[in-house]
Length: 189
Image (tube, rainbow, N blue to C red; front, side):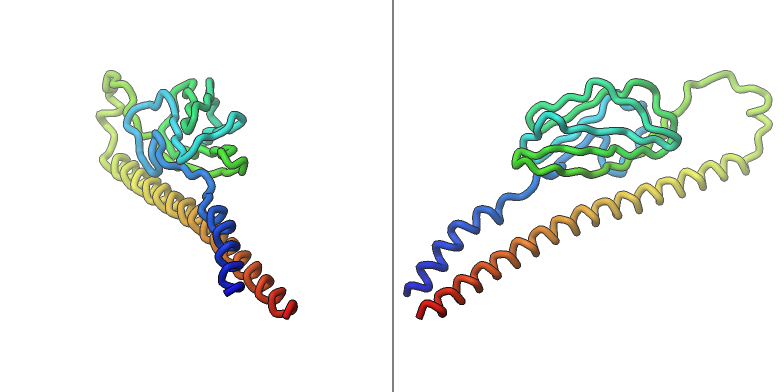
């Protein structure tokens, strides 16, 4: 009876700590893997809990990093203004936050931009272009979309793997504490 009472008390105190999870990204604009047909004006990241000041994000483009201005944090939302036009291509939003529980967490969001250029007068050169150029462009776009989807899957699986390890470590710690308590109780007898 004494063992059951001690084990019950132990689990009552340990169980709430295992339920505390780290803050996770719940939504973003642009969304993971999305291909935008218009230039984005701002980037918004929404998290599952309140995030602390000092959280940040950067935008990496196909050729170089893109400057974001006015990055702000409000409750569980972080926004950043895109300062200029983004050339067509793949982009990665690298975010680093400090969750409500004080733990630093980071991640990535992959998206693409495929905005049409403003229509200009068609020159004679453009009229003389062969269909092969259009086919090459279509193949390149399809390859870029496949690469973006693969990168998004890899980032998501890494995130899930990290959360799985945390859970495994917490369960192992509970088992070790329980085993230690039982050993102490046996030694007292």
